[in-house]
Length: 526
Ligand code: HEM
Image (cartoon, rainbow, N blue to C red):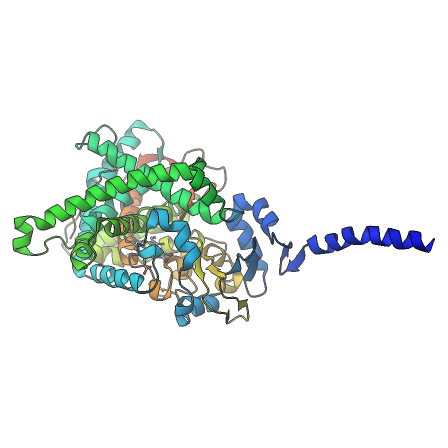
């Protein structure tokens, strides 16, 4: 009898030990399994990662959660402003982008500014800051934006209004931003917003549009590498040249061809006798880098790709969500329209050029500025961002961080965290950004990190606002937009490196009846 008991116990022991070892342990709000960590939950929620992480972060006591994946891959995600200040500014040296980021993004971004650390980053930052801080750049940006609006955006929207056909606003805004960043950064006009069939560049125009599509695919596939539940799986696919990795290789090859054409043309122009005699005529970013040191085509290709990435999907993402929010909130749209009309009336009274919005006039539009910023609070174009921890550390909220961990912040969740924005955090309320006199009141970038914070903060913020406010004023003053098939709730989100809409934003456009007989247009810059 006793022997039987011993046999039964011995037989039961291994499965019991196995059960104990394999059963999940609670790690905050998550259950982590031995070896595979939280992978099962990650896989379950992978189609709604932003929302799932937001639920976890907003429920966590200090809005910080520990995530453990396969093997050693682990780290924390936080929505706590004090933590952001610590790792993005005070202890910046301990939190570079790190080897994981570099390896995931290297095929596409090379060693451009978004994928560089240490001296290589510092040098690029210095060169680029110089360019972004020149007053001439602001003028150049305003001029280019206005030209793109009058020559391309308005005709395209007017023809859509006349035909009654729906247009994908996200696509239009991406094309706009792409043209604009190429003109400002490389003095090249890809003419992507030109209506198909009207491209003066003919076959070359098609090539440019192929480039834009390849760029979008390369961005999305590279971003998806961060979300593999099995780390390194993408490397196997790359080795075998199959699936998304094969498409990535093809897209990058198209991007590279076009980037090299831009570089050749810039170099040729810089060598031309006229430019040599005058010195730098075009102080565009690429020309500065060519003159500034490493002018190898490989390195310049990385510069070109980085700046297109910075400019192409960010402003278009912000504006796409902004216009969708407006479609739900006619009261906000009405206030913006009133502000636009009052600025126009005032500038006409001062005898300024009647049909334009220059930099100073855009600056007067506090309510519009607040509404666009509020849209980015709820739908930050870069909704999630990561650094790498070099040495063990403790964050201000008491969270321990180990060497080699990822340390990420989550602007999307922060916009929905009551501890950061109050109980009405989920509401689209531009007024929260305005002082008693109606002036725009910025907040700490650690609370509103849409443009990042600390030494790596966005260099294109002013350029982005000029572009976004110019487009918004023109669209709202001249047209009414109706979301086609609207009433179906929030459009589905698509997480690339930026926050896009999965099916775009189809809208029907009508010309707005203006209170005056002559409809003002955005023709010139004051
Ligand atoms: C609404 C528009 C924009 C938003 C929300 C935005 C946001 C950001 C964010 C989150 C970063 C940090 C990226 C990282 O390190 O991982 C960043 C960096 C940067 N942005 Fe922007 N950006 C916008 C528009 C632009 C534009 C139009 C440009 C100019 C072409 C630009 C140029 C840059 C550059 C050069 C950096 C790199 C800074 C560095 O690493 O030192 N951005 N931006």
